[in-house]
Length: 64
Image 1 (cartoon, rainbow, N blue to C red):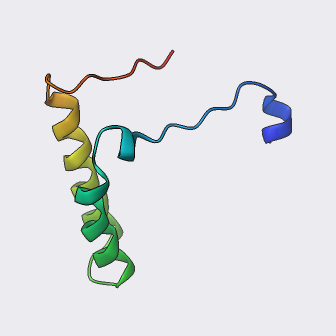
Image 2 (image 1 turned 90 degrees about the vertical axis):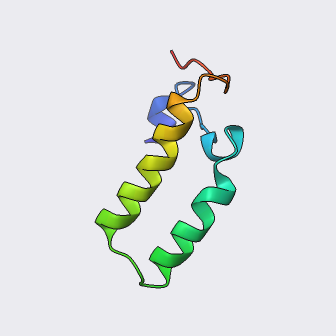
């Protein structure tokens, strides 16, 4: 798949770029420890991303 993509491959490390890593780590740890469901982790991770998205003081990168 990567070979077929050629130069059309990129990686976005938004977790570190927008400072979300420390917020996401305890959520992932709880999930991996079996203390939450897929639905719960999805909801909590989405809330972190939404918070960053709505914060106009955080400069966002544009992906084209």
